[in-house]
Length: 479
Image (cartoon, rainbow, N blue to C red; front, top):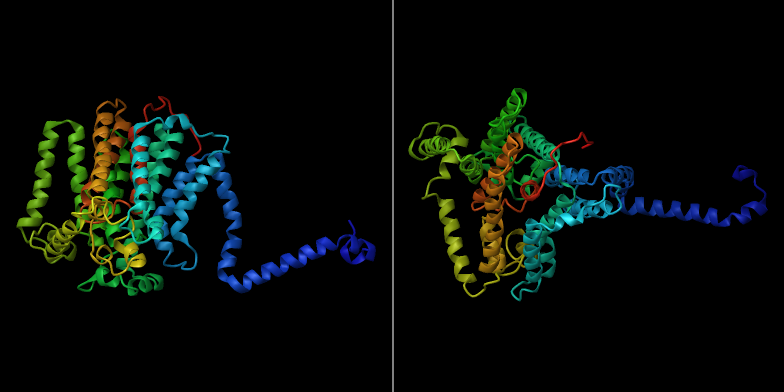
């Protein structure tokens, strides 16, 4: 092919459209660089990872679910460093992208598996949250769009995708192991914050407001790369007790050691978070696990251990020179000032909601309420609890439906566990189910249920408990 400078004028004339295309494309790129600067460079560089992401998910859509899990750990931390990109919608995009790509994947989704109780439970709850869009008390439709994602959108996407693709026990083991790895990574980042220090982005985030709740009496409540110390503590409680309960099962000695080490790493990180409510994650999980063993002696021993911890924290002053122990001890003090404020707020909610059985509308309380309907009662009154939040925004009807959904999973989970014969798989199910129960209990003290990454791990647990038939033989697969 001739070089452009050697072409006759007639050839250049015939290729005028190519010249205009190059000039137009160059001008467009120059304009975008001028207007968007760093953001455009990020988008340009993101084209190649996006292509590989498409290829990975296309080959096996279950990879998309794993990428969602990893991103759910990182997304809140990344927003402290990348402030111009809308990373908050990243999980939504990944879930939607995975579902769309799965339709064209050689590994076709098994939509027949949606004929499942957990899908119909999820569909019913999602339908109710959609109806809340028309709640006459709601001040903002935009607030509903942002807030409903934590209520039901992530749930329905996860349940659909997992029911269509989750079928092997090895997939459950792989997902649990990936969750544990990222819990440990988050724990070590928390250690870095405490023992080495915060970087500039983390300091800027604290100084924007959270410093009031994250540095108490000169002590940092570590938050790692999660949304805040409360969510970090609950996630560490979840990961820690999950590891320890798996380690109690009939797994190899090497795996036992690794799970015990990972569990202790996470539980120590829980203490560094200074999150009192997170203490109830391992406590609630331990009680739920003992019930699943159906071993009366184990239940008695477990009750003694839990009782011993309660006695140590509530009736002694041993270790009071340690800030973390003092902080945990205050969680059991009925006269704690913070608890009294929460109870008073709940009394105010009760009066406000007495004539509002559907609540004030999704997105009307907490941070979304302060953003979209500032000055209102729900926006200005802290809920400090996932259940109080659901009650405030969806009323007694929504709270009742939500609790029915949560506890139906608990009860069905026991049914599945009691009828599982594979001892190793049973141990994983028991650990996941128990950790989920711990989150249910701890969500009364903090609004942790609907936040990343716990919600993603919980929805995986739901589907793992509801899959009607697991393949008996696990063939090696690329995961």
